Length: 303
Image 1 (cartoon, one colour):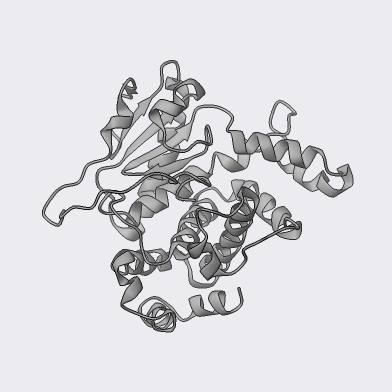
Image 2 (tube, helix red, strand yellow):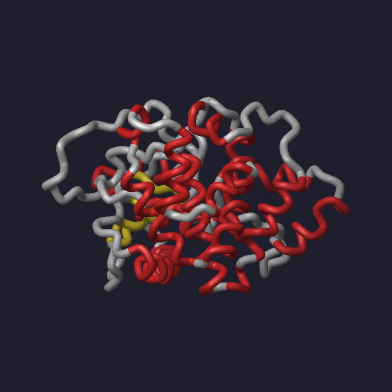
């Protein structure tokens, strides 16, 4: 989820010749924030009163950054922003308050509950208890409260992985958004599987529940539909895609190992959106199999 659903509707990216320019993060979103004193490879800025949350998030992001950069090489010039609900409209991009996002060199996380987690909690609580027992057992926090932040807060690592796909700080996209999303979920899954295996259940339990109980009114289901209707599908349709992308990411990492993150990241950067009119979908798939790994074609063909 490079952004939550509807994140970039209405945003027009300015194009420029930047091959010889060091592109920095969008600093317009830093206004009014306080910089955390740290020695991490990235700067952390936070809303007033959120220093404890900023320290916790920066520690997690640093661990994941070290893990991912050892595989894919360093990602220069990005910032971590830890934003409270009261500052969200000013210092974040997404209309979904608190939802982790990456855009223009800024990795943004909420300092509290996010709106999407709250919405899913209400929905799940409306289901029969026997249907959701395993889910509620998994996501009950230390205070005895059902809390889907145990899932959604981990999506900051998904967004961090997007930053590696983005050496020019969001001046464009690859020619395949669904491939970007699978790769971002690969980074998320690989990190928790390798570094925090006891917490992997907080990712996969929610994914498995959603895949086993898909929304009944999915309008778009194919990979080509995802790219073609990215801005117009319903939130539930978009969310279901993300669950399937995470399932696919698990298959790839479990089958090929963490090292596959690097060639796939290079492929995403190489085949940017300017390639859309240059090669066919079949040629794109053949290049993906040849330049990255043929196993990825199994994911596409079995979608």
